[in-house]
Image 1 (cartoon, rainbow, N blue to C red):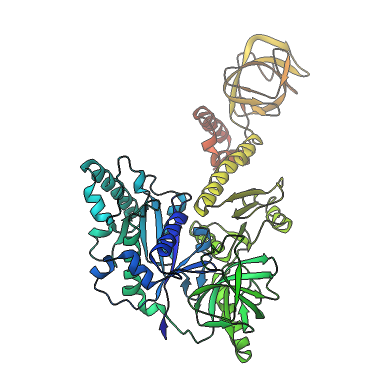
Image 2: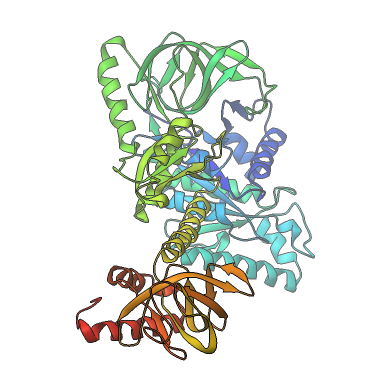
Amino acid sequence: MTIRSPLCVILAHVDHGKTSILDNIRGSAITKGEAGGITQAIGASIIPLDTIKKICGKLLETLKMNFTIPGLLFIDTPGHASFTSLRKRGGNLADIAILVIDINEGLKPQTLESIEILKNYKTPFIIAANKIDLIAGWNSSDKSIVANIQEQGQTIQQLLDKKIYELVGKLSEMGFDSERFDRVDDFTKRIAIVPTSAKTGEGIPELLMILSALAQKFLETCLECNVDGDAKGTVLEVKEEKGLGKSMDVILYDGSLKRNDTIVIGTLTEPIVTKVKGLFEPMPLKEMRDKKSNFKAVKEVNAATGVKIAANDIDEVLSGMPIRSCSKEQVEKVKEEIKAEVEEVIIQTDKEGIVVKTDSLGSLEALDKLLKEKNIQIKKASIGNITKKDISDAEANYEKDPLKSVILGFNVTSDSEPDNVKIISNNVIYKLIEDFEKWQVEERKKIEAKELDELVTPCKFQLMKGYVFRQNNPAVVGADVLAGTIKVGTPLMKEDGKDITEVKSMQAEQENIDKAERGKQVAVSMEGVTVGRQINEGETLYSSIPEDHFRKLKKLKKYLTEEEKAILKEVAQIKRKANPVWGV
């Protein structure tokens, strides 16, 4: 067994300097190392230990450690979303992580999300408190970051400390104990915060020093790999490559892989068995995401590294899927193992619930975990853009429960805006769930308001003296609305609880109206009653609320005004004179 390079991933909120930190590390490696001091792999940058020693200078010597790790392998992911899809059996692919935080902006949504992901996968990490050069009055120098901090003015030092302790406070709220790196006495219990500037390079040597020391001291046993054994890896991306056809960018974390080897790759259904048609690495120092990168064919690759694999029948392969090489005799056994591995993260769906779509297996897993924590049911969960089938699956919920007629999309797109389906998209998982919960609250209010509209609501009005426009057939009388709202169709009762008629129509200023609120004076038309017999001028009438409506109104009480609640009570008291258990 040999020790492989630890796989390190860099996470950050948008524009906090993730790419700049990586570029600075690579740039330093190119400057300080001889030719070949840094190797560009597909999806990764490999920085050998010798180059790290040159960048860190005497810093590493102060640790008095015997380094056996060959170097550091930085995984180039577009962000935290991709990080969640980088899995291997038993956990996450990354051995260690750098969380980049803009020291001037602090924790943002994607930072919080990254911390939760690191927490869930129990990935050790250090923090790069980046952009110290933007602190007002900061003087940059090429000394060690600690020496440079000590040379700043007192005000600047205090400001830096204030910003770092704001981070410490926020991290403490999330269950992490952290401190500025030079004040940390036990790196197993405290997260180190390294002030950095990707622009000037300040703090980068210290960042690499701590990363290397942590990897060496605490990860050595996890980093043992069998370079001569069968390959084990994770698919970063599947894409169409000009001249190659469909190809996979893969991070190899164990074993070796040769051209013509048999490989088994996980899918959402049955694993795919195919052969390696070609293995490709980027030309020296080409950025793997650079579309103009040129690739060179190689016969064999060893862990840990990134490689582009050309193979047939890989259309069903998704980002985050496991990949293994094996002999023909082992194919069935490996297929079963990979199937079990994929099933570990395939979402258990409910009979009812919302539809979830994400860009990768890991994102789906992360979103599922958070939704389940909030007891949100999932009817269907899959990977890829939103299709017509997804829309019809969500629409099937509409009649039964409109609040579940929803598709949550993480990093995916949809072609249509259906009438009965709400599509909520975001590229931050927490924000996506927040948007969904906010929509549900607003939608529930609309549904309940509509429901309220269909019920006989509490109202009370007085028949005005001297305003009888017609005695009967129908009776038309002026009415002063004392409380609540009169609506056309409202059944009416007298103060003794006797049902007498209903509101046939209403007019205000010779215009027909459907409803009238408290304080309004309107002409009310009523069938089947005669003024002077069943009803009299000056008399007070109430809405005669049916018992089932009364029970529903009690449940929707929060939508009634205090005045309406008081009339509801009055109506119940009147009704209970004849039936003591009415509405109970």
